[in-house]
Every structure is written in structure tokens, then in C-alpha cells.
Length: 605
Picture: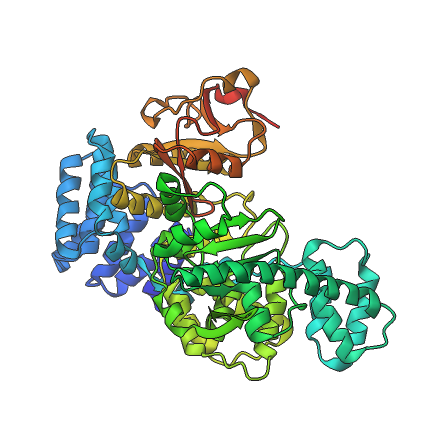
């Protein structure tokens, strides 16, 4: 590693003093290195030494007058010294040389805030160049993982008992009996958590292969038969609705469990299903919802617009409790980014669901969807994705197109999730994944949004999230919505456990409101009477946030909050929850209380 790369790595790791020492050593060897002078300026600004940063960046500009990064550092140094006009001139020069970037937008917002200009004008200006800024900020995955080894170490959440059960399912035959006994000794089979319970049909098929006379096989077979019976009922009911959709010219693509049992394993009892997941094109959503609604009040108008804009699917239940998930995008990220799914439709394969002609994702795309959906953190670890993926990889005649898998992950901005899933399958279950797949996957460029969302997707929502990660995701979502809905009021929802005084300044600079959400805090009851939002410009409490606090009223849930928001036809604002990469429209009558409460009055609940 060169001295320059070492200095960059130290600076990225927050080791400013060491980074400065290394870059100074480099400049002793080569005083004509303009990039080193720029890096020295960046480190000095981080150390709040803007005067020395000015001297450093002048050396860089003397060597290369058109070095855009040097003008960036000059603008930041001038801004730190309070020289707004000079900072603006330097920023304009950087923009003219190299176009808009996220860091230049931040400097522009700081200048606008200090000069009393509207933040919304700046946001709208940069929103038009958002895609170009995103691509410019993307870095190869392997480089990012070297910078943040903690990200590289993230793995799916699987309990020790679940791991034992999975080892029973996928260990070599001569080890299965011992693995099964180890699992039996560790659990109460009549009181299993749902993740393991849903693996019983897989366990039954495994024991039939290696221990057909085991004394518990009849007990486990009962679960398999129950799954077989319920899945038949569910698929039969859904097949009639699909027939009606096809009669109206609606193409239907089957996802997840139903696709797995019908097109891969061809065993309806193997995989418990709470619902059937269907994908239709977005233009067919209104007609599909009307059919699946079964005569109930149709979802239409602004309500339908809200649902399609902010969600990737909608769950409907019939009078008997059988559920269907209607999707128009594969996941929330794809819907948020408006990712085109036509490649999935083109690669899909024809098949039949209870005698009705449908389409299934190709085996490659099914593996991708199973992995990136299942690997994410969930209150109840959905470990059946591991069984699903291993069943696919071991099924004779199933050919995975590995290059397409990598291309799809890059296209869907889910390469980090896919890498995490595949690496886990290789490490724990020796999955038959060719050598070199992970290496090629790690060369995929990763955008800042995917990078920070990956951390949130893989960790418990209640865990403290860094200021940098939250604001990076919030900035991306804000730019996207300012481009789509220029005048929409925006509220940033913050987790109570991860508060940082810098959030208040960030909200002021970006012209957004904020609210605090979290179960550990409760509002005093009188404070829930008057619900309203307070703009950040009036937040002057010494806490850094001021005396305003918001959360759902007692007895309500996030689901009820969403329901309340979409049944009203006028948007007052848009909530951005960066912690989960989520947007939510709200209205005056939504179940949301934001009240005047002194910060010191908020007590842990």
C-alpha cells in the first residue's frame, strides 16, 4: 500500500493525526504531489484548522489550477472561516470543473443556511443531477469492505438451535443422525419458535431419506401433511383469482414459496406458506387489486397512488383468511429507485399453478430474490430462506446463471445483501457455488444508499445508527422526493435511541422538519391533545433539538399510522425514516402527535 493510500485509509478510519503524519511524510518525499496537498487540507479541516488547510490547498492549486478537489477543500476552508462570498466563489469553480457531488451540495446548503436562503431551492437544483451524483460516488464493493471491515463481518441472524436444525437438513448423510440428535437434545420440539417450526416439512423429507424408522417421523409427518393440505387450499383459491386476472389480459408472475414448490421442488407440502406472492406490471395494479379484493371497497384514486408510490406490494385477505400479496416491484428498494423489472419478465419461464398457466421467475432470479429477501434482519429470523436456497442449489437439473445473478444484484442495488447470503451458505453449509462468484460480485460498484441501507437491513432496528449513515440515506431519499414532488413538506423520523445533536443542524440546513420515534420514551398525557408540527427554525432549546417531540398516540401502531395516512386524500407531508429506508405520506388527521414538551420532561418508559 502506498503512503497516499495509507493516509486515505487512516483518514477514512477517523485517525486524523496519524493520517496527517503519513501525508506529511509523503510531501517530504514529493512536494509536487497535488493530491497529497489536497488530502492534507481535508485532514486539517477535519481537525478544525482551516487556516492551515488554506495554506495546503494553495500549494495544490499552484501545481494544478483546475483540480476540482482542491477548490472543494478551499470552499470548505473559507466556509469554516465564515468567508461566505469566497466560499461560494470556490464552490462555483469546483462545480464548473467537475459538476455536482454530494459533498458540494452539503457545502452549498451550509452557505445557503448561513446566508438565509431557502434550502428547498438548493435541494431542487441538485435533485436534477441526483443520478449522476450517485454514480460518481459509487465505489467497488471490495474497496468499501476494506474500509469498513465490520460490514464485511455481518452475517444473517440465526440462533444456535436453528443452525443445528439446518445442519441436520443439509449435512452429509452419515452425519444426519448425530446432527438431529444434537438438535433434539437442545430444544423442546413441542414448543419451537416459528422459524424452526416452518422447517418441519424439510425435516420430514430429510428423515425419510436417511432415517425412515425414526420414532419421531410420524409426529413430523403430521406437520408435513398439514402444510400439504393448507397449501392446496391456498393455491386452489388463488388459482381462481389468477384465472380471472388472465381473462382481463393481466400477466401474472409467481414469487417466493409458491414458485419454489411449483417450479423447483414440485412438492406442495415442503414449504409452509402464509400467503401467495404475485407480481404484476404496475399499470395492471388497479385491475388486479379489484379482483383480489373480492367485492370489497376498491382501492383507487389517491389512496392507490399513495400505495403504489410508497410501497412495493399490498396484502389482501379473503373472507376465509387466505392472504395474497400483490407486488408491482420485487422489494421496497426497487420501488423507491424506480428500477425497471422488464428483464425479470423476459427471463421468466412458463408453468402451471393448479392447472392455470402462469409465469415463474427463472431459477437464477428466484435464487436472487430468496437470498436478498431472506437474509435481512427480521424479528423472527426467516431461516427458511436458507433451506429454500439450499434446496434450489442441490436440486438436480437446476442451472444457475452466475453471471446473470451478479448482473441482477448490481441492477437491483442488492449486491451486498447477495454477497452476505452466498458467503453464509458457503461457510456454513458448503453450498455448491462456483469459485470466483464472490470475487466477481465484490467488484460491483456500490452506491452510498446501498452501502448504508445494507447496515440497516442487517441489524436490529432498535440498535443505535450512526449520524453519517442516517443522514446519507435521508439525503438520498430527500433528493428523490424533491425531484418527484418539489413542494412536498418533509419530516425526518429519528430513532429515540440514536439521537445526536447534529441532527438538528442537519434538518435546519436541509429545510426539513423532524420527529422522534421510539418505544423507550413516552409523552406526558396532557401533551397528546394538540397535534401539530413545529418547523426546525424555531427549535432553540439548549439540548440541540428543542422542546418538540413526536410519536404515535397511545394504542396506535406504525401500521395504523400508515392506514390513517392513506385514507385521506390530501398530503400534508412526507415522513422519511432513514433507518429503514422508508417513506410515508401523512395528513392532518393521521394518528400522529407532536406536542410542546420540554426535553427534560421526557422519561424512559
